[in-house]
Length: 260
Length: 250
Ligand SMILES: Nc1ncnc2c1ncn2[C@@H]1O[C@H](COP(=O)(O)OP(=O)(O)O)[C@@H](O)[C@H]1O
Ligand SMILES: [Mg+2]
Image (cartoon, rainbow over all chains, first blue to last red; front, side):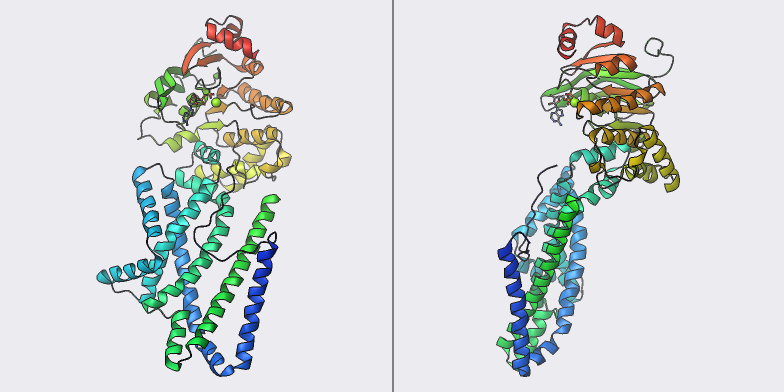
């Protein structure tokens, strides 16, 4: 076995680990701190804050919709890209590698604008669909790197054993390689998921009514900019803190699984 | 045996096979025929091309020139379905390469179920029969990481047999084993040989070669220098390099 690859492509959240008590308590401080601040604001000044909060659930829903749809397609694209990146077929390899290079070299915001307007020249799709396409395109490349590293972490004798039994390359991948690689792949996928959720705030620029956009709409009508953005920041923070906790629990489980 | 009276068509026929890794000639104009039921043992110093030869028979290595016919089909011809051909050629690796996410029994049933479309119950019954044959029926539901090296290699042999192949290839199957486990694996291979399996075995176990081989092939630097029955090769090696190799290993 190669040494276990650490895959950190984009900035997810800091994943708390038990063996890292500093970060672990940092998570607690951040989580319970932001919960307390949230509760304090809602109770002490219900006037703007409760009104703002009531306005936001639709936006949170859209944020999650964009996140889940994008991660789904990004995983699919990432699997194909990851396999393409290790393909011995030069053309496939070149296409996959170029895709990754291009995506890595262009800021996500620029990609969003570009895909949104490029797409708009040919087809008229709802803003949210354009947003999902753009996010999937970008994160598909990051996921490609995660899949590539995961697949490469599996001993090459496994592929040879599968091929020698008569499995073709995709059957070998499906029955033998991927079922082993998922343990390496899952934690960084969780990390990418969190990063993607945060990055969906960019789609508010494309007239998608996500959490940030909803907040902006409310603020510009009521002139409660400070209060609204305070609340939005707290909500994003709480969501990513919860998700990063889930990822760390998952990692612990996998570690446990590996030892036993 | 068939070496001296080849009444049948060879089931493996290598004709002037060459294979290069960059500038290194791993196989130089190798020609080798193996008849059904024959047991051929390949010996030679490290790096002489034994693994490359064996792996070229099921196209794990692609050759640069020459032809290899397996069961009448030219495996270098891309119109022939290599996956179909590989189903008839079992391979056992030095490093076992069992599927770690599958139990011993699942290692045996995966390929027959997916590739030969054998129903689960039948595949499992056959798998258990094979595990009994290699002496580890009681480990059917155990994952490979819980098995000793000798047990893993026996499961690996059973996994290859589960596809009901016509030919079995072994690449130094006992080299990665602790000495006390070599015997149990060789016993399984001897049994298989007695049952008439066609076998090509790369090994340094000269006792095994003496006992079961019809022919022993000595390779050096990508060439076959000798190809004789074991008693002849071991008693009167004709090539000086064979003599040198045997004197080092025996
Ligand atoms: N994938 C490869 N790439 C480059 N050289 C290789 C590769 N596989 C084998 N070789 C070289 O080919 C020669 C024959 O190797 P091999 O068939 O493994 O020998 P043996 O099994 O007899 O020890 C060696 O010099 C080895 O270094
Ligand atoms: Mg070798």
